[in-house]
Image 1 (cartoon, rainbow, N blue to C red):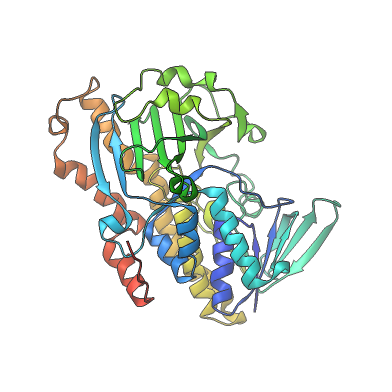
Image 2 (image 1 turned 30 degrees about the vertical axis):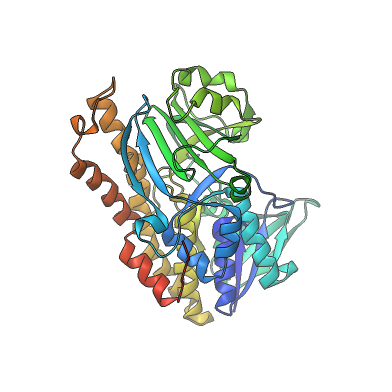
Length: 421
């Protein structure tokens, strides 16, 4: 049996490693000429960390990222609304990690090359079309411009929000849907704040700051590589695709955050400390009626791109990979189309619910509650909402995304994982 994966991102590489561990032959084709550690920070939830730990990658994650200690929600005045422990501190048997997206991708890429061999990942090959009946894909070599066909028993499209395979199946879908908000993302080297491993959301839906440390090597030197995202609602539509991830000047948005100076964080100084700032529209896509067509299916952002709320994009891609690897490894070549359908039946409804929950602000809804009820701040958060109300918002989202402690810990226990604090 041979599986061909289109896309060498977090989802595609996780799937390749999981299939290799189950004895399935894998070939990855990545459109970029070279895989480099691009992007900024992300969080990997315990539900996904346990899957990477089963692959033996926990020491590499520990050497690269930060074990997230807590998540905290503050209003725009820097007053704490809600906080809760995360990872090991919350009772999970594995950590949550705050990590640079590019570093995580490179960590997975190195593991894939080690375990699958150097020829398993072929760069500079862009998907043009797939044949769902034959399980083949037409690729274009970006260097030469020549097209060629690769055959496999199953083709997995993990080629992101602009997936060529998704576009083949849904040619009238159009561009991603713009939320009305723009994100400016960067990293700044500075002093640790709060616990030194805290993840912070501050503000409200129309003006927000998300920030957390992402580098273990920096922490070992007594400093913090701080990932930050400044978000504003703006007039007009989303910028065209070729303007995504463009470098911009701080002056475009910084004035809106000039008064965000708190006793635990100086936000204007944080923004000024970045050497390079990138601009992204906050977009997603409507859930699809189906992912699977014959011997082809979608995974990760190709299947269910979602707003970066609740720290679930990368984690859900890894959970896709686990579900799909289990189904593929549990069948033969003739049974692959049915296996892909079973994967879809498990994962499509769950991720569709997350996409819609994130449009409603997910756990960040507590910020909007505080802004609506106490726009000028509060002396005590109990004036704004009861602990039970805030806890209900947080726990409801965790159940939706598969973060219930019992399920994650049962998987870690079954795998024999023992993680030291």
